[in-house]
Length: 447
Image 1 (cartoon, rainbow, N blue to C red):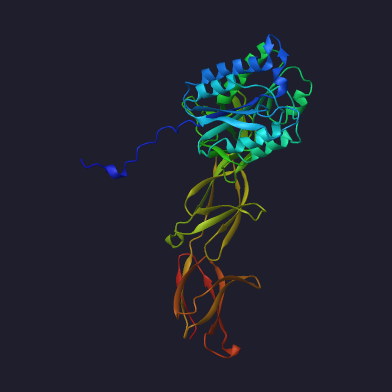
Image 2 (tube, rainbow, N blue to C red):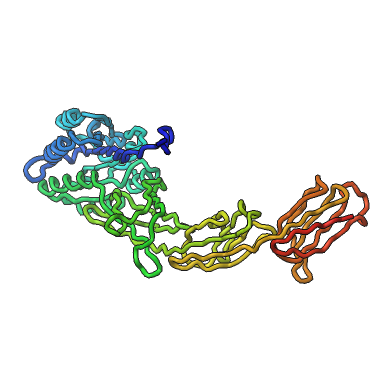
């Protein structure tokens, strides 16, 4: 038996896409204050010991790369050098040893240029199409220069350069939370035990993806709607983060998706018309249910006549000018429940208002047209009108380069107004009135 699907036509299903590369940039405070005593040792010693252990734990993970930026370690204070920030170890595979080596030789001596250090991270992340860029800022102080860390962080996130940063504040500075809550996710490490715990939490969250499901609700509040694409945008940068074609799984519930908890999303469900949820958050280690009102029904515009087989229907929300869809005749399409204004592209254009109801099919039937065969004595200018009481409603202009043409029209009363192309007197204008009946043809002669 012949193969119904030759090899050239068989397209194998693609493998699951590779997970993104998570790039973690540690921005490390080596300002003069880090030499101060804290619990069992100097702050610098405690911080680099725990950070070195964290780097070790990440070294063997696939899809993870690390880098190290340090500030306050090159120029002593006084004077204050607000440019003292440097990428000491760039991103790359197998660089854990280089990061630990650099950490072991750092000597606290300078100031605290937080905003500048955050701004410079823009150049620390090489271009990448499938990467998550995470900044982990470890500091014992607040901005010591003239920069605005909050503004810089927001701008970096809007550009899509980094995800929301993590900030670990070392010590008990009461200004920490007030200063850093707008920079990113702030964690207060009041003592070295808490610092160790917080660092582990931050790294785990930096690597996390969390589960969610989108319940597309029908008119009764049940999650029965499905088979529609959903786009998740980063609400700050506008970048497309994921597309998921909604599915009801084998257990009869909306299938699970995985999202990045570091992103606040704008969700667009591509129903007709689309539904947007402006701010969607998911949380680490918690299954989030995202409920979206998306009740739908089916619209079908049909005609038994082959004369209209290639025609289309413009669909608009009732009373609104924006086009929702251009639907093919005799095709089915799902729409959100509600009223719609239809403009069927037949002659004359047929306009009708319909109601789409939950889980039902609304059918609009187009009357069978009649056929008119028009003969002119000479090429000329001619327009076709539908008679609406005493008014003429323009339908179409006829061709001016032929003397014979045929037109399909919906049933009704019509008039053709004609003038020969090369006549120099308006008095040569002629008109013919006629009636179109479904399924019948007739000839209109102007001589």
